[in-house]
Length: 402
Image (cartoon, rainbow, N blue to C red):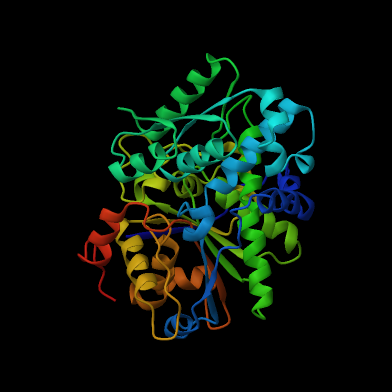
């Protein structure tokens, strides 16, 4: 159900840490703040849960409130699209906020671009929303097995969306091919490949807003900062952004970052087990209820950052996420409620399992989690698949005895 591998992969020169300096994080946050829909998402302090788990603090960044889209991914998609348009206009992103991007002058100079992407749900929704808000066009490809609710959420934003008979990684390749043959278009994907790094790097930089807010909120709560951060990974872009911000912010003693994956697509965990510094791909159907994490090929930029700095990698079954969903939606008396979906709650489920289940004592000790630990969890999505959410938190699917 849970496997954890300490990171012992050989290190490389840090080519990408400069993407996540304080100045770059401030640039991304200023861009997001220019949108009229922007507000800081809540940071839930779960003091009673922390006491029950035997740790010092548990904080959960609740991204179900982000721009009304129920997930964090719009931060990356909007910033990448903003930078692509700014480049077309020949001006820096600092001068290309929401009011410039939506101005009649920009429409006259730019015309309408088409942005292609592949998604399991949340990223495509963010790209579709950003394209609509900025007067552009979006084409979204979704892998086989996509839930109808996630499909309809994207279509409702005006995007052209299809469910392909392909897995996620093959959808990425098809989206890139379509963009290459379509005039005045670009692919907006949160994974990189040879010759395609600028846009995925911008997406990762967009995620810095989430981390910047969370660290600011912890300081406002009187907490000096996390000792441990659990962050989910599909291709690894969010995890790398979090890692980059933490290393730049706390260069002498960064928090221990644990990368958490679903066991159906645990390419980072398998890479850490192999241990030679080469990424391991996972093929096939990639079946898990954690749809947003079902990516079998890593973002190579993210992989380099994480192999250099992540503390450990965890592979978790769906039962771990289900436990996290139930804990967060039915909190201990006095703690705030967090509605967290399948991909969003796996960190909470992992932490609870490590602290409550005796069979995971050695794994908890491996990570150094104890009474002084201050743990930051990132709930990256709300109930983006309401049917699945209810089947877990109401129907008791995938139960774990604790």
